[in-house]
Image (tube, rainbow, N blue to C red):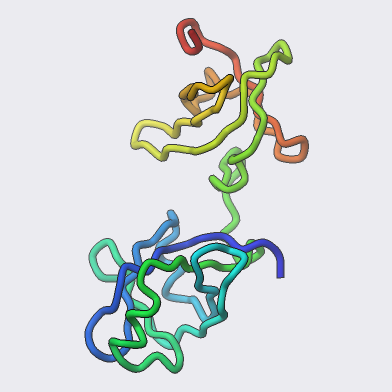
Length: 169
């Protein structure tokens, strides 16, 4: 099994028969309908394998039932934990689209090769995504638009940007 990727956070129990309410952390909420096996834990290193026996979408959340979790008390023990799947089970993305976990930690340089900083977060906003870049103790917000982001090179762990006037002061 490769690296684990987060797809949701368990908010708490749902009902009395062991179901849990999950806040999806994915653009592909439909994936929850097909889940058979997940990994649950506070972080991707210390997880337990669980089998999904039923699932359904409810408003913006997902309701899951795990094998051998049959009452509210058992379901409460999952509250606040994250749901992970193996990276190889991720939905393939279209060209020039990237998973957030692939972008975090990438070095950001301008088109002249000058290092700007490192991506520490990605904000998924309605108009466009924004890369949060740690640079010399400051956060710089880089709009993920084609006028600014010229190349994302996952192999070399680098993003090349063209600085717009006023982007970095």
